[in-house]
Image (cartoon, rainbow, N blue to C red; front, side, top):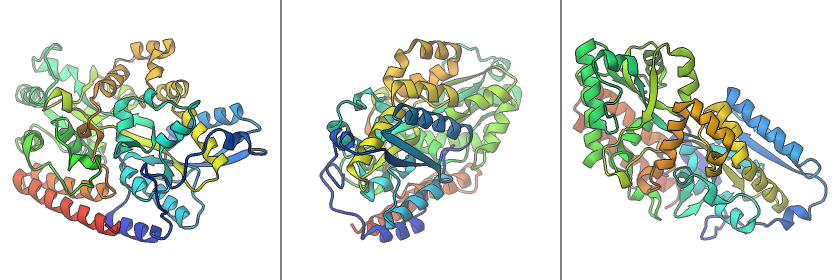
Length: 458
């Protein structure tokens, strides 16, 4: 599930409050030279570090288990104190307050959409710098490209992905069979899915499609059409985004196809939080559902029919089309003492290691971010027993690591998302044309991006 992070108004306050604490940065975006292993080796006593996160429930419990293991492995040398700081919005607000009071955590697990903000405030040492200074720890090449590329800005790895989700096409196989659609029918492209959804509705009277009213899925339709959501280049090649591209090209074509399902009655509304999209699917009342891989365990528990997770359908060239990841990543403070920075990097290396990722992914349903996890015999056995989990891994592994699939990096993303989905809800309900909705969304996004740029002082 996607979490809201910062509105433009809140960002304005936070950035103005940080104007005095942002220091001169290197070309890689760090505020100090990355320390090497000697900084920790020469430290006296136990180096205590802090970690803040917004991972809730049983997933948070699994994170704590890993931290307890790290503490046991490093007894007498490193001690990690982990604190849940609330949902992502609360977490980021507390983090910003800690920057003002010079009490920032050593390691911060920030949500994916916070990447632009975390980069812009320049209070973190890029992961690329730490990996270069500490060659005995995490190798960035071991990370799954589709996961690591999301947290690379201007060609520099800023953060280490920790928990990764991916959007899937969830299929009610029983409904498709009732509609005469065989299991072998191809569902790889958006056109194929739209056609099948219409067939189900026509032949069974059951709705063919739903998805949460979340702009994350509109972004997926854009990236899976081979388009950058933000222009230019999703903000990843040195120039900040100035607009969005959902009102033109293949992205517009894809959104129009989904809008047609809604206005023709084939699709049913999934509500902003996705609760309706979840409930409708597990009740067997819809054939297709765009939803995160994170619902796998819930669907297995609640759905009483044959269902399957398939790759998110594409609408563009294979080499430049695919879904964008969700989840969160590990950021290392540039204001911590050198020994704490190295200890924090060792924690990040441990959490992103093949063994830790296997343990965490199997317990939570998130996708391993370390490629070497897939070499484990126990992981192979786990995936063989859960075809949906294998589908998640395959999708993330096979997604091309290009700007289109890296997602847009800007601190204005939450405001853009809210504006987009408000417009599209009106279009899906037939209250305005798709063209009118998309053009207004693009105009609103341009304004949000300009406001954010001015708040940065650019």
